[in-house]
Image 1 (cartoon, helix red, strand yellow):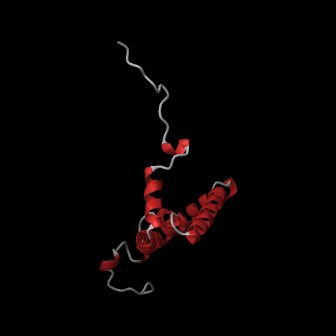
Image 2 (tube, rainbow, N blue to C red; image 1 turned 90 degrees about the vertical axis):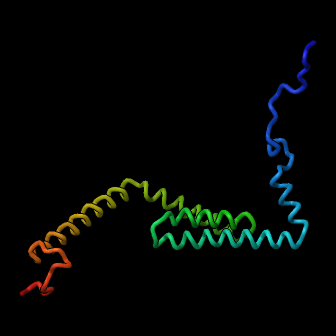
Image 3 (tube, helix red, strand yellow; image 1 turned 45 degrees about the vertical axis):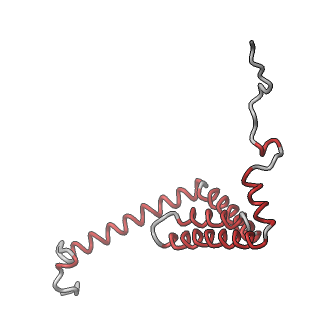
Length: 147
C-alpha cells in the first residue's frame, strides 16, 4: 500500500502567494474598530517616540544614538505618513554621509586631523606635567604657572 503525496512542491509563505499573512489580517481587524485603531496608534506613537527620544539622548550620552533615531522613526513609520517621509530623508542623509565618509580625500584629511589633534593633546599633557613638576592635579598647591 503506497502513500500518495499530493503536494510535492514546498509550500511558500502566504506573502508570496498573495494571501494576507496573520499580521496583516490582525492589523486589518484592528483597523475596522475605531477604538482599537486609536488605541493601537497611540501605542505605536508612544513606543516610537520613546525610542526616538532615547536615540536623541544617546546622541550626547553614550550609546548608539543614530540607530535609536532610525529605529524610532521606523516604528512610527508603520502608522504615520510624516514619519515615513522623515525616515526617507534620514536614509537619504545617511547614504550621502556614507558616500562622503568613504571618499579617499576625506578619509586622508580626517586621518591627518586626528594625528595632529593627538599630537596637540599629547604636547598639552607634557607641557602641563613639566610646568607643574609632574604633580597630579589634586596635589598642586599653587595654581599660578609663573611663580
